[in-house]
Image (cartoon, rainbow, N blue to C red; front, side):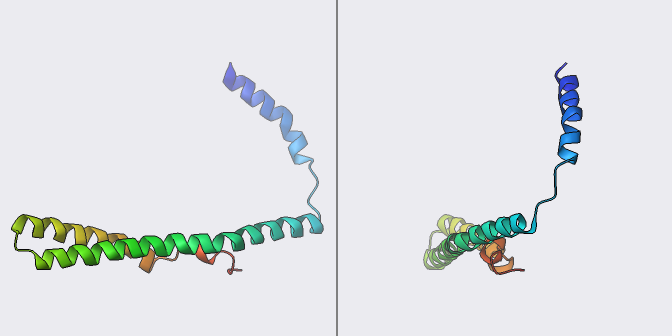
Amino acid sequence: MRVVLFFVVGALSLPAALARAEPTDAEVATRLAFIEKRLADGTPAATRWSYGWLATFGTLSVAQFGVALGTTDPGLRADTAVGAFSSSLGILPFALLPFTPRFAATST
């Protein structure tokens, strides 16, 4: 019954949706300005987020690699070597792939 009601309401609202007028140039300009401002306002936070994770994974990788080299305990060496490798995998997306929110305000 709900499915039928859903389709009936959708069919009744379709003509109203199709009859909607196109936005004016002023409305489009206002909407674009709003979007561009939001993107520009979000760029610093996106940059901090991206570099923060990059620094975190980098620090973890270097620290665990240092512990792996400096320890004589075979179990700890294996654990920290695996941890260093895993943390270095976390660096790859941030170092190699562009983080779109950092560049969205400047792209055209």
